[in-house]
Length: 294
Image (cartoon, rainbow, N blue to C red; front, side):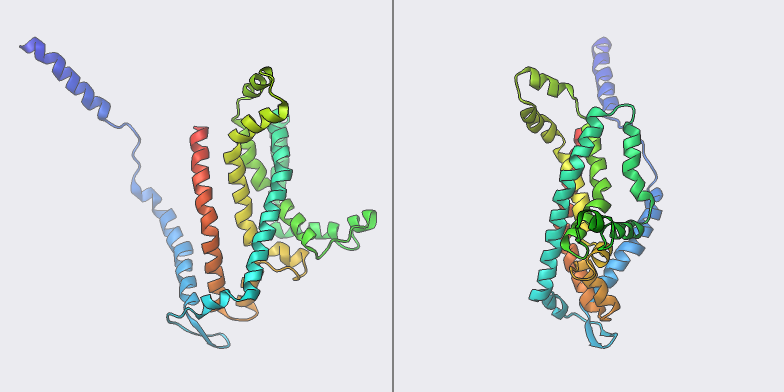
């Protein structure tokens, strides 16, 4: 009986040992600094913004706090809706152009570079070493009516939507190239060789293999570009001369010039609600890409 019971005991011990988790456990207090920072500078500021959005402007820079939906109703005025639509359209066009410019660059870096690959990544990151404002003013010098393009090619596009689009693509291009480059780096290029050996044309092999395998990186990079473009303030202010305002410019003017924090807060909240849809998409795609990379 003793000999028969020993295997059962060993089996039970083995099951118990297999059920144990050897994952490292970290003390929860390590997350306390980040939590405090998040509560004070994000949730606290967001709470103040929400309180402002339900308040009422009773005079110049005088606010009566309460629960009023007048500010949100004013957001749906056709004038402000047109600015929202213009912002989303310009951000969408800027994102599409960024994809068209950035994907070939990332593909070339990942597929054809070997020795100078890190150098290419470094050159992509160089613009981030300078101020966003300085980069935009430098672009203004090139696009100015008396600048290089106007004198050499006769292209006077300053203070037009084209100048704003160029500024968006120029400033946000690295945010798209880097995640797409990471997706392309994880690709197994022998799949392309196998597809071509099976009589697949290069374009068909690219569409069925390369594009589909890097689609999570493309969507992630596009959303990383699109979301900050919708809240852009500097580029429209400098390159359009105030002719093509984004929602960010409208919010800034409402706070600083009109001295109307309730309405500016309502505009900001509505913009955040509109962008929350894209943030959810980004989180879902980023999670899928992380699983793919694992």
